Length: 291
Image 1 (cartoon, rainbow, N blue to C red):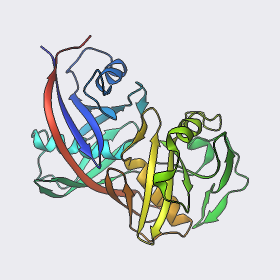
Image 2 (cartoon, rainbow, N blue to C red; image 1 turned 90 degrees about the vertical axis):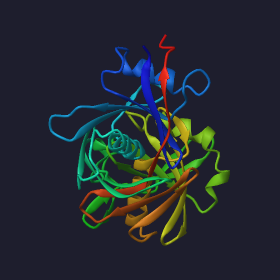
Image 3 (tube, helix red, strand yellow; image 1 turned 120 degrees about the horizontal axis):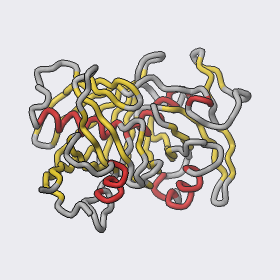
Image 4 (cartoon, one colour; image 1 turned 45 degrees about the vertical axis):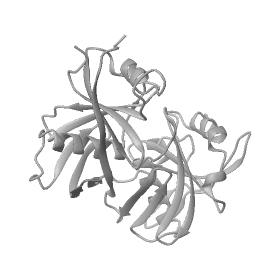
C-alpha cells in the first residue's frame, strides 16, 4: 500500500500533506522526493499533521531540500483546512490551536466557499534581537521605534548587488530589502541564493524583495530558505508587513501582493502578527513509488 497524500495551496504556495504514521520513511528523505516537480508530486514543502497532547493538532514542515522549517504561515492554513475537511477538527471550534516547532499558533475560520477556505492565523510576535533571528550582527546601529530596537537598512554587498536589509524573525529568519523599482525585474534567482547562504546568517535566511505601492499595499517576491523562489510565503509576508510598519511606510493592516496571490497582515505592537489568506485543496492521491 502506498502513502495517501493531499495536495493543497495558499496563494500559490503549494504543499503535499500526509498524516503522521502514513510512512515509516524519514520525513527529510520523503520531502526531497515528493517535492521534486519532475520525479515526485511537486511542492514547496511537505506538511506532516501530527497529534498533539497540548493543542488540537500539530504540524511539522519540511523544505524541498529536506531541512525542517520552524514556521510556515501558508502551510499552517493548508493544514487547518485539511483537518476541517477530513473531520479531524470541527468548524464549530472557534479557535484552533496548532503546535509547531516555532510554538503554538492559533487559527480562526473566516469563511468557506467553492474558491477555498479563508483562514486567519496567529504567527507569533516578531523577534528583532540579532542573536535570536539569528544574524551575526551586534546591537550597534539599531533603530529605536515603539521601544523596539531593530536593525534596518543594513548594507550588504554581494556579487550581484548592494542591498539595504532589515532583519526580523517570525519563528524563522527573514532579511528584507525595500526597493523603488518593480519587483518583477529583480534578479532574485541570482541574488536569492547568495543572501540565503551568506555567512551573516548562521542558520541561513529567507530573503524578500519588496516595493510599497500605496499605504495599504506592497508588492513582493520571496526566496525561501531550502526551497528557492516560491509564489508566496506567509511568514515572509508577515516580516514585510512588520518592517514596513516600523519604517513608517505602510498602514496597519496591509496587503502583501505576491506572484501567487495576496495575503493580509495585521500587527499591533507588542502582540502577535495576524495573517489572513485562502487555502484550497488541489487533489488527493496515493504515492506508490516510495523508493
